[in-house]
Length: 416
Image 1 (cartoon, rainbow, N blue to C red):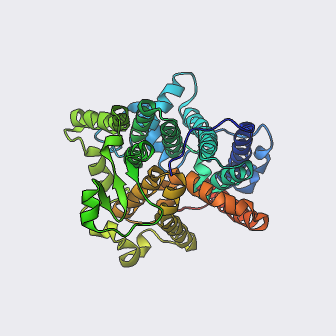
Image 2: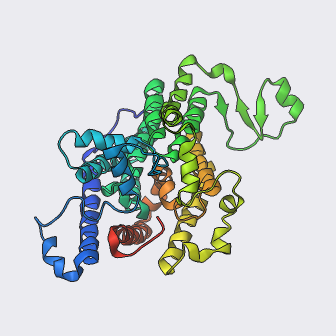
Image 3: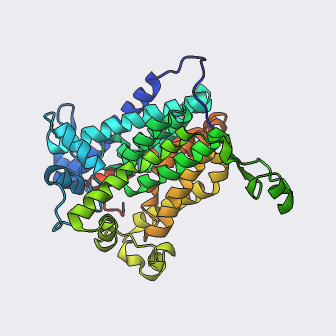
């Protein structure tokens, strides 16, 4: 079932995603300020947490954030090995810095603007999908309070920008704006390697919306000869009709422009268009190549667990990320039937990347963030009709979000 453009109807309530994001972001900002102050000065710095004592970037520039800031400020240098970080986010930081913001503040501003855009675009997509208001509110809360979505509050990571661009591309595709969808999707492929998942997602969305791809709810039992005589290319009831496609649908291939541009740069910069991946594998980023059996079997989790698992928080992080991964894989068919097979393809493509290339499951919680809005929308109607269960789920999610946000800011170390 392909999602269509929003129809005329009741008010869209656009203030709600803005207010929802602001409340969650402000709360998480305060949590990160507390954690950062505690890690720096202990509780003696508590007075500085009163209104007026906040430092905008405190607690939100840590871990890989330094990579993007160094690229934004100095560009890529072969001696530093930062090419594993795609340039899109760093270029956005540089653009905001040119307007007068400091480097750290520019990074936070880009992430905050992207987080707000995620809330608005998720709301727009839910309008296209026909979710009623109560379900939309529930889905928005699930998204914003998803523990790993604390990055949407302004953490200096590239994930908020990536999610905003992926959502923007899919919203445009659902409105049949194929050229714009391809261009925005291409920007996503310039932000993170996981942005490449938007390419097959847009391609399948084009097949789905054009009627070229027909996936029956129930698989018909017909013989191969009948299928061939009917003129279909089929696999377990899936039907393809290339004649339904139009030249404009090819515009989804524009979504490759970002990664292609980066590869052209790397060819001139390092003599290797895939240098980003060479650096990723050899630079201690916790990723392996396609032929690295220890990555796609997750052997490190069994053979050498103490390399990344130091305390119970690491264990819980691995288990939580694994649960998200399993949910994305198992609920893919439900996402496809309800919201279109492009959404399912997005989730499956991200899941494949996590399983094949990440040596540990923990990054899955963040790497799968682009598909979380759709999982939230899928479960929202059921939860909206059960307020007590919804309250428990949101409370647990909020607690997890606060803990992860505090940990990122310096309260404890975790494998991000």
